[in-house]
Every structure is written in structure tokens, then in C-alpha cells.
Image 1 (cartoon, rainbow over the protein chains, first blue to last red):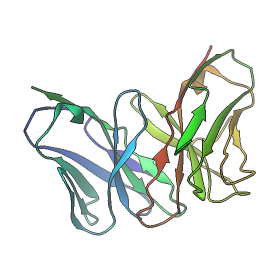
Image 2 (cartoon, each protein chain N blue to C red):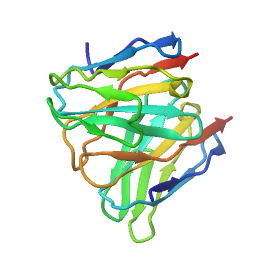
Image 3 (cartoon, rainbow over the protein chains, first blue to last red):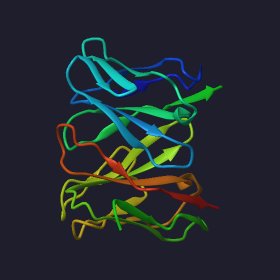
Image 4 (cartoon, chains in turn yellow, cyan):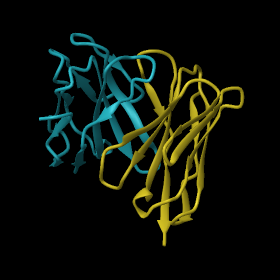
Length: 110
Length: 114
């Protein structure tokens, strides 16, 4: 079966660092995406990993271990505007069909 | 317009009625997708289209149909709505079907079926 797990909720302090984990079990693997979704809005793309290792993009980094079926999103220097849901999605098989986790709701407080 | 638009923004519908959710993109993307998002379940793919003239079934296609007559438009039809189809519906598009082809999402349609 296809399964993607991520924590339901997390809280963190402004200025701190937070790591959001994602584990997956899928019948195939062709890339992992992270999206950010503010309440009542559409998801927006954050990062893409297809090879093992760390991809850094400004305050956000994403890591992938294909052998462990594991990824994390690292958010540094947290800002209040980072309060949102973070969605982990795996492309399994062809045609860019994504399987999404349920999302992690992050609350950043002063 | 720029990006993806969806209409209507929200709709309340009586069970048994037919409803078409509209989606239009102006990025000339080949691939388009329809998802529904429910609390605690995340986004689930309903139908997709890799290119104009072709469609395919996603994870939860029952009760929904789509068409792709041209590149820009990808309407989703509920032939006879049921309360379990109450959800937020997102349309998305991507330039291709492999590599780092991120999906761009529309603003969503909030549908309530009574």
C-alpha cells in the first residue's frame, strides 16, 4: 500500500529552528516534494528531492534518504509568517501523480 | 489572468444535483490535476490529464468525471452530488510529468453538499 506519515501538529518559537519529518512507504519512488499551505489558501511549492542528501534554499532545507523512506524539512530563523501546514508528497510511478501526507500544522509563537 | 483560476469560490449544493467546477490555466502547462482536501486526510487525487485530449483516474475518482478539450481548461463534474463530496477542491497544473515539475495550485473551491 501507499502510506505517508508526518506529525499532525508542531509548535516552535520565533527565531528558532524546526524540523518536520516525513516517512513514506510507496510502491515506487520518483521524487519527494514539500509544499507550504497557509490556512484557507492553496499549497505552494517549497522543495524537491530525488537523490539522497540535503537541498538548501534560503531559510528552508529538505533532506532525503531513499533507503530509509525518510525526509525532513528544516526551517531556520522561524518567522511568524511560517505558521502554516507543511505537506510532504511522493511521486510514485509516472505521470507526476503525487501522494500527499495529511500535513503538519506548524504554529510559530513569539 | 495569470496562473490558475477556479470557479466558483464556494458553493452550497443540494444532494442529487449536478455540478461542474471550472479550472483554467494560462501557463500552457501540459498536465492538469484535480484534488480534494479533507481534514485529516490531506490532498487526494481525483483525476488527472497529461495532455489535452487525455484523462486518467486518480486515487478517488468515483462520482466524478473530467474532460480536457484544450490545454487551458479542465472542468470537474459531479453528476449527482452526495454529502460525502463535501470538501475543498483544488485544481493544479504542471509543465511536465517528470523531474522537478512542481504543481501549481489554484485557489480552491469549497463545496458543501446538503
